[in-house]
Length: 109
View 1 (cartoon, rainbow, N blue to C red):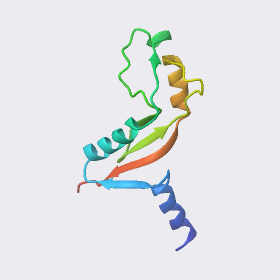
View 2: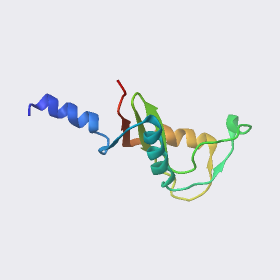
View 3: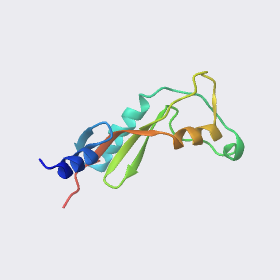
View 4: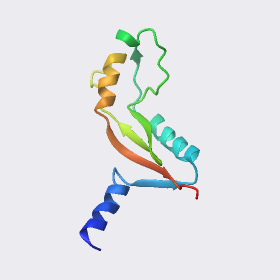
């Protein structure tokens, strides 16, 4: 195998590994959300401009985002003190999240 195709294969499957090729968008989304729910839980305190908004996202250190024909599972590091996280801090923590999982689906023709 030539170096470029090998690199391309690794980049596509990259992240940690290709975590499955699901038959639908919904299956890929569910698999990613199930993985995200298994993260480390934390308590969220409203603050700043998010104070009046009800937060409906996950309360673990994992989350999913849809990118083209896949969902990517991200994970971020929580503070060591175990205290509640303020909404403003959560935005900063999530911005430093690393891609960990890749949940793709087959495109229908």
